[in-house]
Length: 211
View (cartoon, rainbow, N blue to C red):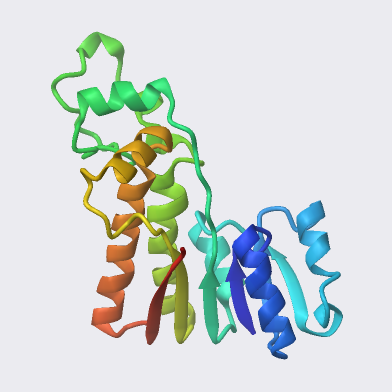
């Protein structure tokens, strides 16, 4: 079958519809397989014979591997936006390069006062499961690693239309300010896919730029 990640979203649903119409067996991965949007997929033409709906979150590696097992191709349409929060602003002022985002280790940067304690994860927006560090960048890493682990030969990912633009362009600055630096993490996620494509460890990898 063909695995579709983010199958219940606007783009994912259309991908599922087209694949079913083409007679392809589809495995739709969603975090809520019993939700209304997932159930609506089962009502699409040819769904009864060709569609399988499975539970999974692409931000979780083991779940991604389980969903991808036995699939010859994967189409990732996941697209989650998270509004910026005051925590993002504080973190950006303290760590402009996002060096420690989502990667807190045993040594902490000097600017944090010792009296604040040992655990600063509350300050790290990367600990929010909805942050694009997780839903975009970590998801891209999981897709590539899962494809390697399962032998999935083709990987297609819906790509941000803003990612090719310069970081200082007005559209990117505005979008990053509103949506938790998501364009930055889309770019980093695309680099993961491009590097995997050059290594030829996954087979075929394609980015489809959304309009």
